[in-house]
Image (tube, rainbow, N blue to C red; front, side, top):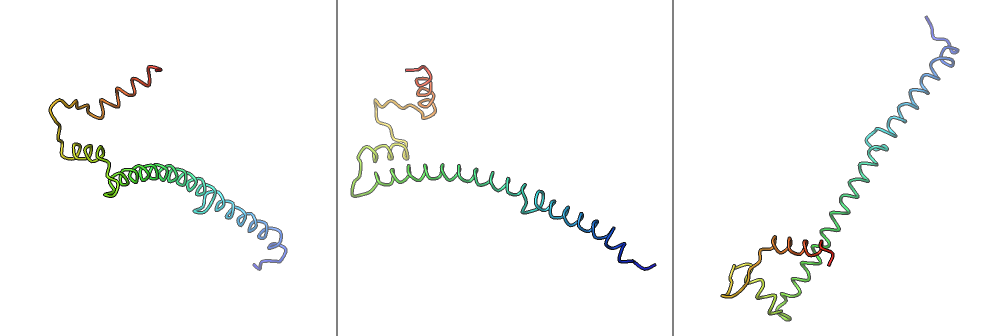
Length: 114
């Protein structure tokens, strides 16, 4: 049985076009570079942007600390604070408040509306 030209035009060509359109529609929405992948990349970019903002804030804070530790402009209070925190030294009569308790006290003060 020979394929006639009429069969190709009437049946095979439309079926091929429908499959071809379906293939590209699938790729456009669900493929590795489609709409779903775009949304995933946008979410990753937003998450990375937030992480970048946090790292930038940390860098600014560390630069401030490094500037204070510069030998040309050494802040005596900063040196004293660093020595005490790193080595754990406390003088008689010093009041030591752990950082977590200080944060709780400050949060309680801020929450009281004052």
